[in-house]
Image 1 (cartoon, rainbow, N blue to C red):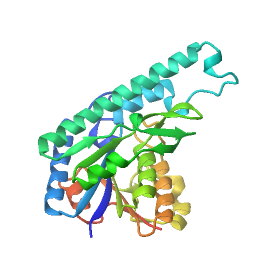
Image 2 (tube, rainbow, N blue to C red):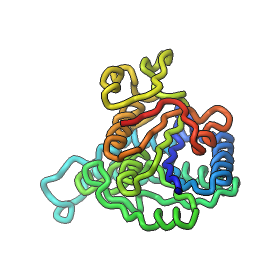
Image 3 (cartoon, one colour):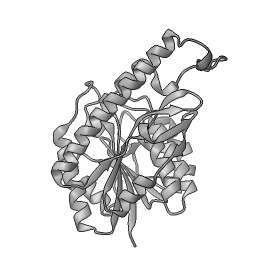
Image 4 (cartoon, one colour):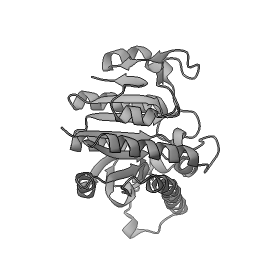
Length: 279
């Protein structure tokens, strides 16, 4: 039976989130080679690859408050002039798109150089949101890529929003929609952290397993994110993943570090690493 895995390469892993617009090119090259090896050794593995925006998209997104969208107006734009606030917002919207796509190009270069057949699918061109949630997404190209043994690559991106005007959807937001649509077997979230910490940022107590019941006891210590992150950091990610494992029977999620040698390869081929999230 073919296994479907959604793998996210976190922005903290592929960029230096403390230095604006700083890619970790050597890390991307190594991760791409690990993906290639996993696909070669496990012929039945189907993979959707996602990545965060790291020190690229999050910097202008924070400056322009892109995720929040525009305040609602009583008068439709068709019947009035666009004001300075709206002009500034859409300027930022375009800048976030540019930076997110610039980082995606680095990721795609690494995959191409490693010999991974992959195609980037920009959410900005295919997803419509409604108040920060995916409303419409034509996933036929993604499904056909999987059928053709091509790795579809998605990433946190700006999208048009029916309520907010515009917003940002994180990779986890996008994975949420794909999980409901495709019913993957596993979601892998690779970053810098060895797992989910009970006492972030002290990092003395790693949580081996999280369930909806156990998370209530430790959520206050999980924390946010190191460096720029407009989409909520670790606590938000864990809450999203807990919702998904309750919705999709048999789904498991792993939060782990992609830093050490071959960890991405090991996770893709079935090893349990970091913190396991289950229903």
